[in-house]
Length: 131
Image 1 (cartoon, helix red, strand yellow):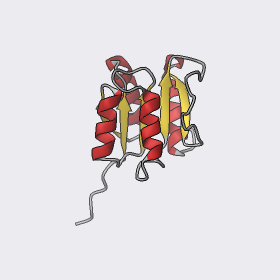
Image 2 (cartoon, helix red, strand yellow):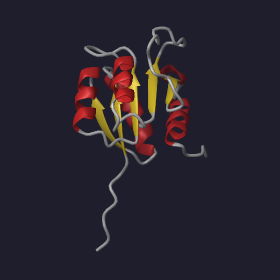
Image 3 (tube, rainbow, N blue to C red):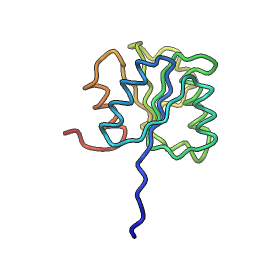
Image 4 (cartoon, rainbow, N blue to C red):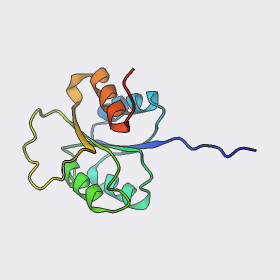
């Protein structure tokens, strides 16, 4: 009997349920299994317990721990630092990024830009070619 291949996973951290639903629809359409966090503190707890994610999507403004702080945590932990991260924001600027480790594995998506833009961002972050 062949080994069952487990689906690749994405962590979506956003305090807005509607935003999580949209990101989940996009991620599931790309074959990813979704794990959700309702705030930054929960995202850090999940990542510390289980860092086996292909992608992490973070809202900037969340209770307890903001998305930028979660990103700093991800980039500072050896077993997490290579995970691509999408910063999901409604803000077109990158203000507030002082000390935030922005690199080629980090991208910004304006969540108000629509599902097609969100899908392109997920595809790009996963290193797939857009269809």
